Length: 67
Image (cartoon, rainbow, N blue to C red; front, side, top):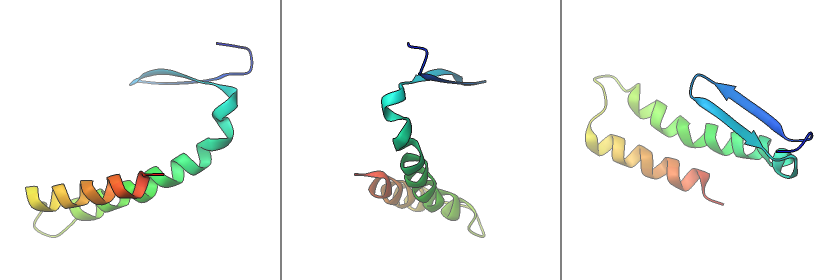
């Protein structure tokens, strides 16, 4: 850890983010939000979500966050 690193802390734990990757955070957040939107949309379907829909939404999530 250096003086220029960022520290993120929450009830889930603490992470040190090296200064060298800080510029990549907005893009990573965008990918995460796009990916999780598939899971959230599936979960909000009327009547709930079944295992097939859950698996399909997780596959879409994984594809959205690649690269």
